[in-house]
Image 1 (cartoon, rainbow, N blue to C red):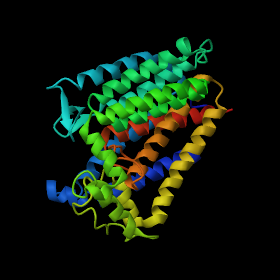
Image 2: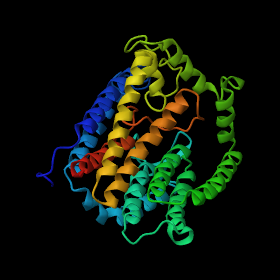
Image 3: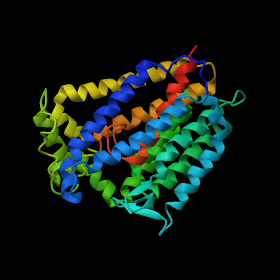
Image 4: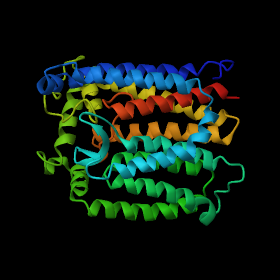
Length: 365
C-alpha cells in the first residue's frame, strides 16, 4: 500500500464515479420494462448491476491503493490464464452460448466473459514487455512482429467465439500501445493493409457480419431484420431533441430497442435526457481520456506510461465504437458503453482497470 503517496487525481475519480451513478440510473430506467415482463421485477437489472458495481468498487479501491509496479510480477501468469480461459470457453459443455456466441463461463445467468479479461491481460503484459529498457520495437522482425503475433493469437481465439466487438477493442488498445512504444509508421501501415484484407475476409466468410455491414450502410433495406436495431436506436435518439422526453419516459424501451439496458443504452439515455444529457456523458469520458493521457506522459517509468496508455485507449476505443453503433455510424458489434451499460464482467473489469489508472495518477512527476 502507498499511504504516503498523494491522493488520486480527482479529475479522474469524479468522472468515473459520476458515470457509474448515471449508469445505475439508466440501467434501471432502460431495463425496468424488460425486467418486469421477463422476471416480474422492474428492479431486476439494476439490483444485479449494483452487486457488480459493489464488487468493482471494492476492486477499484484495492487497485487504487496498490503500487502499480506490483502488477509486473503478474503480467505473464495473468496473460497465460487469459489464454487458458479463452480456450476453455470454446469447448462445448464448458463454454456457455449467449446471443449466438460461445463467450461465457459460468452457471445459469451468472458468468464471466474471458474475452473481457483478455483486454486487461494483454495491456498489462504489453506494458511490461514494451517497457523493458533493452527492447527495440523499431526492428520489424525482432521488435514489432513478436507483440503483433501475440495480439493476433488472442484476437483469433476471441473471433472463434465469435466476438468481433471485444476483439476489436483489445486489438485497438494494444496497437495504440505498440504505436506509442515507437513502432515505425511504415511498418504499421503495411501490416494495416494486410489487416484490412483479413477483416474483409472475416466479413465475407460470415453471412451475419455481411448483413450487419449492409444494414449499417442502408438499414432501411431490411428494416425488420439486420437493420432493425439501428433504426430503432435512431427512432429513440431523434425524439429526444435538446432536453429529452424526461427520465423514465422512453418509448423505445418498450420492446422496440432490443436489450435496451446493454449495447443500446445510450440511445435510451439520449431519448430521455436529450442532446444535453448525451453531451454531458461524452464530456465525462473525454475528461477521463484527457487526464489519463496526462498521467501517461508524466510517469517516471515506461511500464507505467504504457499501462496508462493501454487503459485509456481501452476506454476510448470502446466508447467510440459503442456510440458509433448507436448513432448509425458503425456496424453493430455488441460492445457495451463503459460504466453505463448493464454487464457484470465488463463493469467489474473496467472499475478494476480504472483503479490502476487512479493509482498511476499518484506517481506523476
